[in-house]
Image 1 (cartoon, rainbow, N blue to C red):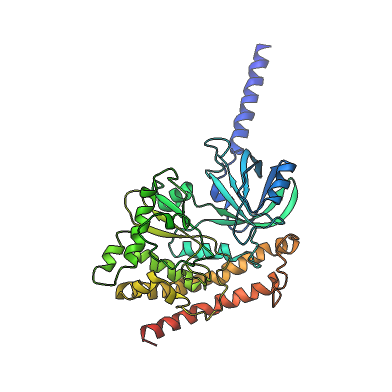
Image 2 (cartoon, rainbow, N blue to C red):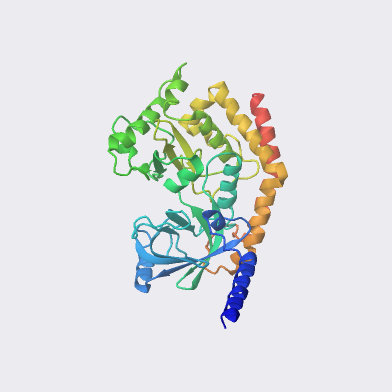
Length: 412
């Protein structure tokens, strides 16, 4: 009997060892999996029906509601959801911000404190945001990661969305290697377009424009004095020390690179947009007063024609005009435009990225019954018409930009 028991245990052990040799533990999911290229994620939100009705009724307000979020087998309970967006806000297809630690201190999802569910309401192609941010990253500038997802709320399909990495301390850690500094979100004022103007010595005029996203409890003098000083120096008379004074507060090379990338992408609502400066964050590292730009909300990228001027609206931007008067910074702008043109065609990147993304989401776009119908648009807007337009832009823009830079250098 004892011998049979020992043999049985030995056989069982052998089975366990054999199974252990062939079965591997599942790999832990990370945020990189969430933002993986080449797939459409599925995200489900579960919200109390009364809360959901109030969220839709009061979509213009930033009211937080509790919810659960599920992605695959991962479920995060007691998260916060609220309406978000500017011109994209609507009760039909909600734009949403999800915060994981608002009700449960320290809670994160795949290392993320928050996540944007963008309804792509203003982009009939659905891909401008994702392609533009990918190009910023390709040009070596920090930008949020993005992916596509089908969103369900209480198991009811909400259509195709864009998952966007929110700009917060987690993003700063990943993209910049530190998060101790001061992050500001710029808010466009429809009553007074901002062109890097000096708004005076008082701090109050800067506060509605630059909302702190970190260090929110710090004194106004700590938050806003360097910003005020930055715009004062930008607007000071041009002389031999203008650059050194401004560079106490701003990375001018990064600004010129950033602006060149925007202009290559024919961005109509960025630093040199049709409506003044817009759609950016400023980050000031904790160890210095020097700021840098981070892009945000790129659903109007590649809106301009392929031959959109490389100087479109730049005459209005005080900072850009002053920087272009300095030969080294002017060359930084031109050489970055040329590099954009080269990086766009290397490996057929820009055409390929648009083709891959639009092919991936085509069925999901056509199945999305909640997407913006763009009533009254002339000509009518549609995904099927927008895709060839974007591909034509991607094919023709690089050559046009190279030629435009050559003419600019020659004084033409």
